[in-house]
Amino acid sequence: MRIPLIAGNWKMHKTVAEAIALVEALLRGLGETSDREVLVCPPFTALHALEPILRGRPIALGAQDVFYEAQGAYTGAISPLMLRDVGCTYAIVGHSERRAIFGEDDALTNRKLRAALSHGLRAILCVGETLAERDAGETEMVLRRQVRWALEGVQDVGGLVIAYEPVWAIGTGDTATPEDAQAMHATIRQMLSELYSVEAAAQVRIQYGGSVKPDNVDELMAQPDIDGALVGGASLTAESFLRIVGFR
Ligand code: PGA
Image 1: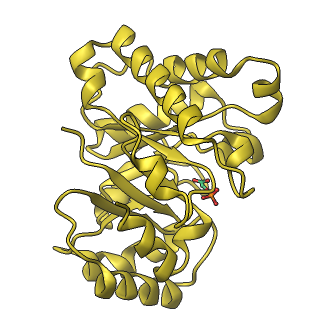
Image 2: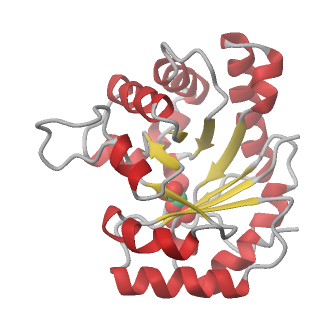
Image 3: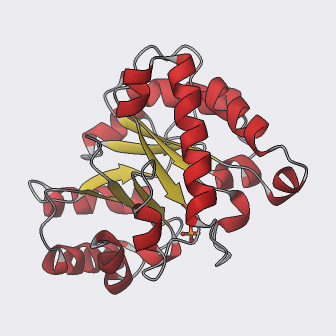
């Protein structure tokens, strides 16, 4: 049984005070969560302040990125050890904004993913095609490349979550149809069963991301291979994120 994971990726939003106010509102409004897992990924600067508020509560803490070394002369980087130290249990790797804006490639994503897993973080690996790649009929090829590269040298997918996020759907209001998303999720699961085993692939949660909103979450979550959502814009207010977390 895969428990759906609903994650908020706050991106570069929220001061510490705003972050505290948002998680307090989420904790107040959160209903029964035994059949789903809830995660917030605030900016690095808010993690330390949120850890004591979330300790023992039904919302996990994650980071939006992680570096691949534990320590050293890497100006500006944050290590998996540091993330563990401030209470993170998850880290996002390979988000399309990291790939497009910060020039991160599949090899770097692979190093980050392996570092996260080896330090006991769960990793949310983001994959997805651009509009040009989709229009050229290359979606499956792109996903295959991203998944295979990112998982190179990874023996155990126990701590792995994959987020399928078509780049053209991120922040645009355009969502993949539930049927299209389901087809891509099934394709990714098939890739995992080729790389590992059918049993291992069946355990990996595959989230959908890209303009997930209160009014489209229910039909997306009804698909058999969609195991949660990675939510950007709609995770920034308690009202919309709680509605998404409460999907039926
Ligand atoms: P969005 O972002 O929900 O604002 O489209 C999703 C993401 O980038 O993870």
